[in-house]
Length: 503
Image (cartoon, rainbow, N blue to C red; front, side, top):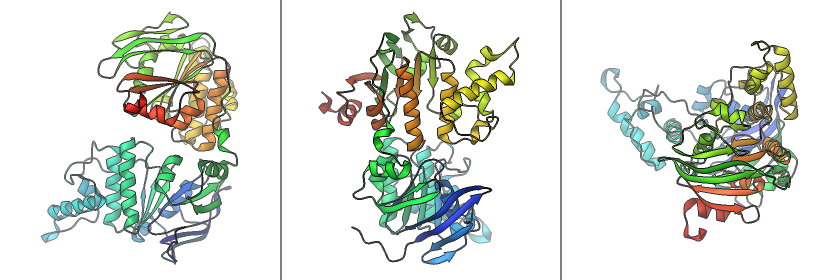
């Protein structure tokens, strides 16, 4: 067991925070030690974001204390947090796109030459030294516009180092990153810890927590549940602490005897994207498309649904061919598509929950060409209730909901059409473990009722826990088909990466 320093770099001590009558955080305490990565985990609504905003100086605790280096401090603003060496790296960085990387790092603190002019040479040299320290090559003089999310996060980390931050809070930093980008970020995080900094890491991905962190704090319903070393803990231990139930409940798969073929994809091709894709899905069957990012999984199903074009091939639902490039024809045939990016492609965020939940049935609910609120509201209530969606008022904008509840509204929208084929693309990305179990329950229930399900997922535990068959894609082709009994993580990864061991 490692022995931490006697005094933590930062300590949260018995803090509480309420918003009106809602207690967001109640009596939470934990230390952050230099040289360690410390995970903060919990379901959506557990209070993690409130803790982050306290450390960032956005909110002050109602009671309790924040200590930096053993000294009680008041963080009344982000500038106060910055002055105390605390930096927060958010999931979606907010750089100025028309400024250079160096200008973004040193904005407000640019080195000056004679007559108060900005010393661009010194600024670029200082930025280059920061990236050398992080071990990543980056041109300080290039504009921030066009940088990937991963590179933007590295700029934010360099900005934090430029202010001598020694407590780095990473809030869901890997949600939009590929595997290689995640590993590069972890390399940077480890180097920060090696230099004596403390990293607080927030993620829903257990494999990342165990790969990076040495200590973990679990929150549930705004309360502190435990703080302990990760060594010796299992994923099941964390799940039990977070949601009060075992990991086995995360994948409530209902065994179903597959029925007749519902969806047939035959020789589907699109130049430079995917080639010669053929498979079938039966009623009651969950078929997972697995593979690395960029393998073409989403593109295949978007083309099958008619959102994206295809050069050749045929898509049939219950034996009837669909016109290509025609999503309305796919919907009339009984297909439904829950997209990967629910906020951009699945919802209209400023529109109400009830309107979003009934968008696919607006014509059916209209009378004489007009949409009346009564029928719309009854339909929205029916489906959001079935999916146990949590909201204050059904007339609220859907954008105010948590990620998991937004996903339920997208599912409600499509379930209301009584689909015979459901395509779900990364159905649980960015939502907490408890809500994941609910989404899995919904998908499994639909399959048990005879819906043919195609699930695209990058999470291997989800694929193995939910799929009856796994189709592995690599470079635009299906390279392996595995039954539920055959599939395991090694076989899927061997096939996805083209390793000889896959043979």
